[in-house]
Image (cartoon, rainbow, N blue to C red):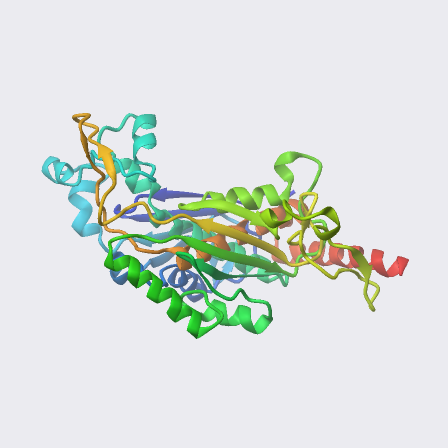
Length: 393
């Protein structure tokens, strides 16, 4: 049984971010440019804050890759913070200037952020340490780990893609064809249509003018998975549970559904499930995909479809009421540089996290110390489940 895991370290305005990925099989090609491109996609989108204009995500691979391929050892990646020198005096792990620390201190927690519960949990009156680690900036580390996972599953013929479906109440066309998925992937706003992209930008501009922020929804898809990835035998091995947990962990995500999720709650059973058929090749096939490709905690061979809802960003130019932690007197929430809308960015992080969960499930189920072994075991399994349908047809 293979074990795939990653750990991260670093703060939003610290020296940089560190990602260590363990369990990748040896022999997986890792083009550095591909990793950098995935990080670049995370920074795209209209309505992003000023930091996106200066943050370059300077990525360095420290180990676990040799001559362009994984070695089987842990893969270490760092992403440098281009603002580090401006923040060094207040964020240096070993020695900080007391005046600089005081200047950057935060005593008024922001509603909707980790500030208050995190400060109470870890005993921080100054909530700067909470803000720094809870920041969505940390998802750059997740995107790096997810990029490695995506390379692994792509080598098995598995494809992950995403699209934005709504921002601030403005709904746009969801992809339904391969061409439309490709268009959404190439759009900085995650849109199928250029006209929809302009509509979303207009909505974001409206929020900018009044100092507000916007949330929205997006969809993530996985193609190429055979039936039976995941398991029904224990609660923590069910794939839909792992997917929901990974996407809910993304900052700002407040809802996740598999397939048609909440709509199915209002539908009769006759219209909620996907009948099973045999196609002309003797393969099991569904004519609908209400389940979103997952039944009983396992893939069923259809496209895995996951939708998520992101709340508006809580850092506002017109702060909400709060309380100062040092004086316990009424005040207004701290204002930190922030985005107006990060939905297009969140869908890229969701791609990374979904890629990770799929790669983790594949490695758990098939294992292998080399990419060749993983491919052989995966291919053997795919042939077996396909042959089962052919034998009975």
